[in-house]
Length: 254
Image (cartoon, rainbow, N blue to C red):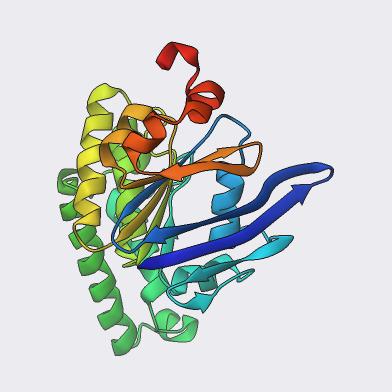
């Protein structure tokens, strides 16, 4: 069953058609990868799904609801979290504080309650801290919780960003090139973390250039080229697809 259904999605910038009539589904509790050469429209596609960009045409249906064109915070409240190509953390805040920010999308206490430190706001803040710690412990980074993120190794910063995303209890997690900047060992750790997150029942949609990682973790792969969907299938099917080999992987990788 598809928890995410994208149909006829398009977006142009000037005369450039960045995403051109793309359609696909992401199966609930599965890992779907979106691959393609630079400029294929992968990140634009993510921005359209997450509400960072408005589509020119097409629909995004999530968990049975049409969320096309909703603002990012409304998309997040419906259960979609994301990470970015470049780690976006508050460097002067601790790892725990950064993850707590992700949890605040689930908060209900208003601004006035927070400023007045009402009992309800204090109780909710304790709950936010507890849930943030659960996310940190899930990803095995509890030893870094009180350290400023700017002082942490890059691979740990990636894990903090992942923890922040899952602290919001998403049904769908969008990972935009999570292995970017990681070494081989860190990428292996990332693969384990992604599998651990999926084990919690979270559906994952990932854009990634590291083909070894993609083939290792994915249930389904969507291939984009010049904004259009070139192919979709299981990892073995994509590996054997002649068009994908020629256009994306290249003859040397065949």
